Length: 184
Image 1: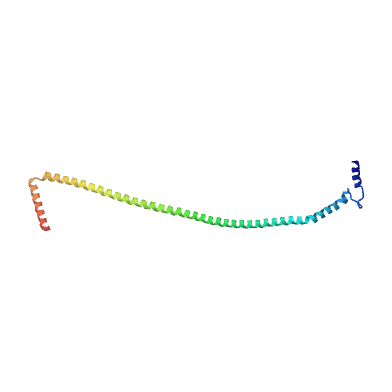
Image 2 (image 1 turned 90 degrees about the vertical axis):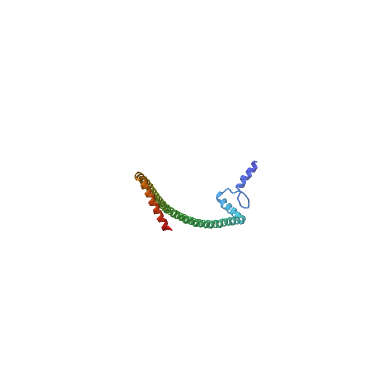
């Protein structure tokens, strides 16, 4: 095993002319190694990398197009919503104005109806008062007439004797007879 390790160590110290070996000088080997690795990567990975970049570019462009379409759709919906909002606000203002107008109209109708009802009640009251006055007047007349009749009957009964009674009856018969002749 010592021989294998010695052979690797001795390879490190060999000069690089015409042979293969490890160079431990970092400053001398890194730029060369990096340029070789980059060259190989560029040569073999150019197609794969360009395909990946093209696919990525297409996805980004598709996403941008979709975003633009969605944006336009959103703007259109926003405009429709704004127009609808404006229509609803105008309609609400109309309802509000009509509501105020309707309330005012109902108030006027209620006042007019109340005045008409009060007028009818006043007329009914006046008619009732007039009717009650007429009834009271008629009752007073009847009472006065009954009292006068009773007074007259009382006076007649006290003053009337048989002879006067017969003369009154005879005068009334003559009066009715003359009325009968006039009507025939």
